[in-house]
Image (cartoon, rainbow, N blue to C red):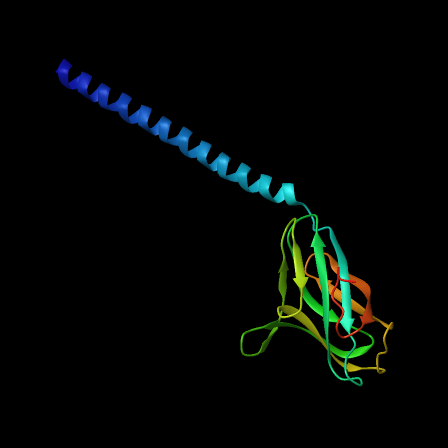
Length: 167
């Protein structure tokens, strides 16, 4: 009888020790998971956006034009969801593919990174100018972001062959 009692007691200790250990380890894993997620979001914080290197090559006689710029982000991730202009009927985001262009609804602005609109890549298409642009004019663009709201920038019209950083 004592042997059975000891076996039962031993089983209870083993089961109790296992349950306590499982609870402690499981709880620790949950705390680690919560803490890890919290640190990532807190470290990035809100997006801190700025726009640089913006230009529009002079379009032919008031036709559609491409627009190029860089959105720099020194903070957390954001998303460019719309581009508009009071000086044009529409401004859309496009990506060049080997055989065509495709319109894009939104673009990610990575945390501590940049979103670039470049020749032969992602770019803006500006259509329906209110007045025919001339060299040296500026077009106001309103860039709307999912988290940061709208940023307005004035983009200069440059020569068709202009490339930033080249003289």
